[in-house]
Image 1 (tube, rainbow, N blue to C red):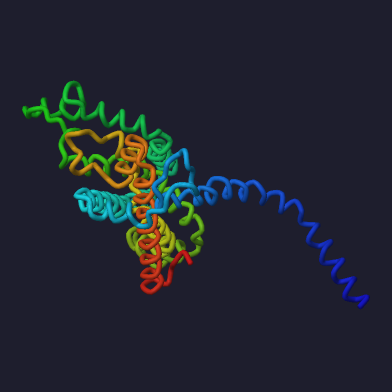
Image 2 (cartoon, rainbow, N blue to C red):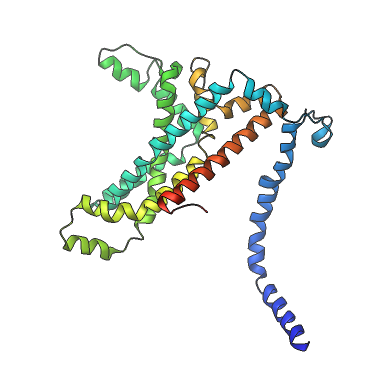
Length: 308
């Protein structure tokens, strides 16, 4: 009995000795509770006819009415296809560029030049979405835009790409690659920094060329990181960059630029249909989770690399 009491006292002292760690844990836990878990309570308005006067729990229950209205609306197919096409192409197009840039910088002999390239390519990541869209708008402006100025030098007529539905996706994807390639390359460079120099020395002694070292040492080293990032990005395919889409969107390119997130914003904030927009947002989140789980499962089976 005495030993048991002594054990409890020692165990309690041991737990209290880690109070600093508990204190460090407190801010992120509070943040998650307030900003990530507490808003989940508000999701119930997706199943209610919400009115601010009656509140969340006082509004009448309507079940799956808002989901059925969205699935049966004429805009459902267009919104879902636009979202999936834009998200999938953006994901596929954004994977190889950071890898190629990281491998090039890692293999470069001129370290100062490599660092300069790394800095220049990383800088656009710090540009806000509003400024990025402003730059794109100025670049593609019909009057005075660099794109149309070059076309004029070549004897071609000016075009308004920002109003062209067919040009919206290339503009969105290319601007995203320009902004995110440097940031992605840094992640791969960090992974390449962990490769043992002995492997490169052994490869050089065996007469391996730069391309052979990249193929047999660098690529296998960063492949787990590539797979993990691809899985994480698959979960956000349906959550395409809301801000940039909204800022690049206009009535002329609406047929290809209107995605689920902008539609939710338009009917939720613009039309005050809170329950309907919440139902669509919840559908959006469920599809994202399903995509993430499917891709994670497939990756685990195919490459033995997964998030969990």
